[in-house]
Image 1 (cartoon, rainbow, N blue to C red):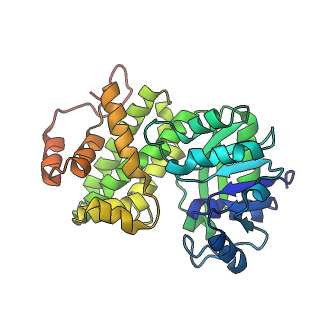
Image 2: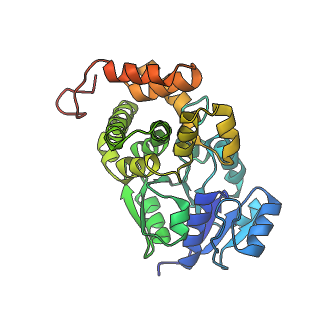
Length: 342
């Protein structure tokens, strides 16, 4: 095994719990921080996160606490697994507690409301001087803790950060690939949530495999087009963080955003769907942020725009679908020659 590290995972949701369990099983001194002291104590005693990962036993070596100072003391590597709306505040809380050479990694797949900051942008702003990065990929937490073979991507400009994460997280069932395109990897993780909602809605309407294949392919085109304008590498979207995560999230009811779309397709109101989910569905917030920015930058995103008009402008789904199918014909493959999908 590589050098033993002290690792903190901040956020007791499903993914944070899953990766904390892997790291602890890999022999590192691992702490999982939860805001709720009562929930943390229950998880510590039962060795199970009954709210987010019921039925899965966590290793006894994983230490669970609501004491942030205790968790952060002398920590070498920190994973921030906090929803986008609370992410900045948690970064501010840990700033005075971080070792000068600590590596900080975001696992959140979202965009900060009001600023269009990605989570790694927040890390750079709030935690200057630290090596930072992001993790993204086709990673359902329930399958990770069940020992299913899984791969993810760690993206950072810092080789030290990517190598530290790879050596800490990699196991016989969890493989970690590196990528220098932090912007592209993180945008992929955020954007695919929009299209998971669309695919869930399509499934609720009884869409067949032809429709599913069309939606996945055109979603990938939109994601790459938007990321290219934002400074990411469109080729990143051909990897695990792009097409891999897109396929996973858009084809399974384990995806929260897919379930949101399915419920909406069955006629349930958006507020009621989100309230009943019990967890954050980042796609709804991301859609609002992306639609505004795409309009500002004049980026062609017909699927995202169509979903926005259904959710926030109360347009009939049938009318939007008809417009999408009968709209201007465009070329198939993005980024060939001078074609940008217009």
